[in-house]
Image 1 (cartoon, rainbow over the protein chains, first blue to last red):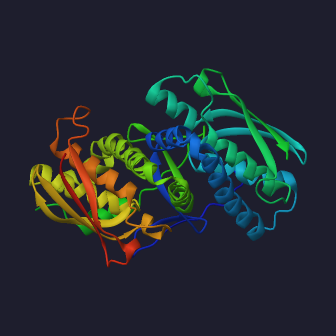
Image 2 (image 1 turned 120 degrees about the horizontal axis):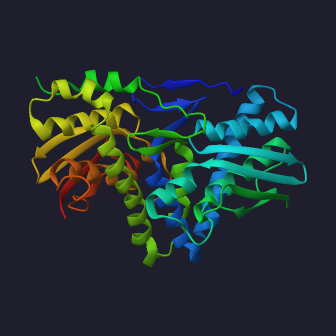
Image 3 (image 1 turned 60 degrees about the vertical axis):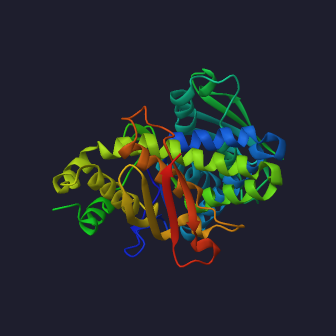
Length: 171
Length: 193
């Protein structure tokens, strides 16, 4: 792993940070239920809100990292998001990217595997979180603002597929 | 001896979780994630901001439920973990009460909230005071420590309800004060449902 990781602890509040960003531990139960809540609130845009919030939050973190570390090559910038995914405990991804889009394969997935552990297989893909996450990876890699890429979940471990596959297109 | 909170907090705060070769964090019998606080707060803020009045309760209950189930299952993994056995159990002299004190020390050490028990009537009622919790950073209206409520409820269920996994939904937690609404501290009351 090439990502530089700086874990710190505030001795007064005991809040934890990673590379200056406050972070907190939860489990697959939490993300599974947050995902389900977002899906169930589809009539008020819940699913899109979750994707957007993840994209905006991750964009800020990746952009901060590439700025501080002077990363200019798209593949180096892309690698930041890919490696952070594993640091956050979200799984393992393989990214194929160019400015017009690409493909992401999920080899392991906290959200999909957590969903199946909790409720069993689902009839449709569930990984809204990773859709937003991948949109942020591509936007930072190619120096674009949020909402520049559209991400579609084509195959899903939560539905019984061997891997997750996400198709990315420049909007 | 009873559970010495500061000692436990300092010992547990040193623990860090890290992804394995698959980018997963299997700990405490669950898959753990380590996410930015700003992301979690922003999701709650946005979803509540767009929810119509007749759906606010549904959304709030959903947010509490997510934390509750997380806390119930993960909490069981925590209080039966090696680190809890090593650090907390040697100090336990008052049974469940001490287990609960140890659990709140873990609660603080792992950054959910700087909080402790201020009143406890065993198996009936508990009052928790929090001087810092990440949901206090959120923007919005009213008291909104949904994660905190869910975890308090879970910890009390684990301690005083039927043994895991049969004790779910025995107790309920209400927030009575909040830093996010201008109070000096957050206050949470757990009672029988």
